[in-house]
Image (cartoon, rainbow, N blue to C red; front, side, top):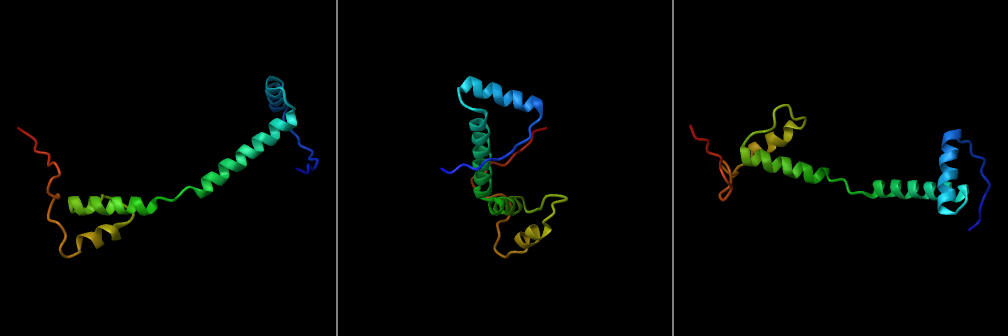
Length: 105
């Protein structure tokens, strides 16, 4: 791999930590910095590829609205509750087989 020189300024405390880590691992400070940069780039790449599960969150919210026949008070997406509650043929009350809380006196 071709290497290109880079002048890097570090605060003295950070340089001491890098030097200490390099000494303990028996490598150069440059190897430590390159590894940390590589790890940071890999981390960012994984974060960017992480699936956005907003679609599942919306589905779950829709199921809760359907189940309890009401939207969450103050929820930003009132259209979800409006859409679910105005659908024809929707369930009336909790689905069969789900536990229903009955509080005693």
